[in-house]
Length: 495
Image 1 (cartoon, rainbow, N blue to C red):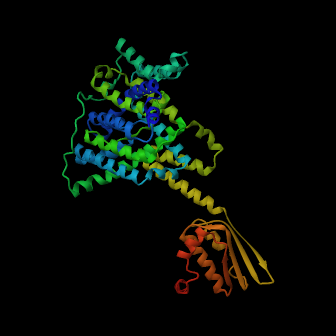
Image 2 (cartoon, rainbow, N blue to C red):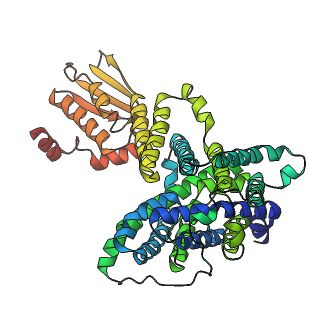
């Protein structure tokens, strides 16, 4: 237990503290921006980011991953806030948390195994594009100072790590933010700053219960939004966990993460914050800056509140160009450049799944739609592919006037038609043997195809024998098959 606590909290203190500070600085403008997207006060996003990061540090299933208010969630809140107001958003946030805790206990985190690598790659690339696109408003219709500062920031980010000793100790995004803030203040450069994004809170968040009627009508209003928020939040969190797992060569507890996200969202709603989830951009900043354990997530949350309440007069001076440079670095680092090179090597179906996922996510700005489209396409391609790996050969024994059909492969809805077409029902033979030793029947469509074949042969006057069914296939055939049930066969023949 003690060793586990040390590993989770104290195994990388310096790296986690520095990374947490960088993440906190990058969280502020995003939390404000996401609040504006959702149509609520900047305090709602900032309180949410503080609360979710702190809570998830203790109860989450993936050390080193950053959770806070996110754009994907904010987009789903717009209509609710516009039509019913902030109090209903807080109630929806609480219900979102309860649904996510339920998902954790139902072990729905395990469903991530149905998301193929090509869908994850498409999701990552789409997020990289969205992160970059989100910076474009800060780079359009601006003075040359903004471009110069952004270019200087990118230069610091990519060149500072090359400096001996110091370059490896201090995270370059932090140096970028501090350096450009000092330059902007010393030379009094007229440039957009964090302070221009909105008013920062000046008090600690307080416990409050949403001021909404506790009745069925309220539930009907918030339930559709809460279900959408819960699904998108868990999808983004599970995807981010997968990416952080890859970056750190470690594993995460996805079902614990589902419960943790739920607890964090309930905490956020009770402190006046909006619903949030894991953030791929901030998580990558954290990992790239040296963060590895829960301490980095806790530091990000606590330091965010300290920055907002104590260092607000300095914080508002940070030029947006510095944060734009950090987010462009995140965008470049997030994008899977190998996926472009692999387009010519990977199968066409894999490439189509990846590209469609990217297009749908970028077009809709909704992670759930993109992942759903990718998963459905991947499933269709897989079913089609496996359906082709089914072969029926036959041999004839003149002595006994027996035709033996040998079935090899998987028989299910995709291959059932091919299975039926492989038999010659018009051949005049006394006996037909269907050998299923090397075949497997998966669903009722496959059982129906077997019924059809047996009944057609019997209708032509042949004796049919089925041999070699494995135990799993025999179970489904015995349960749903009708070829050995006279009354069912008569009913089937009537059609």
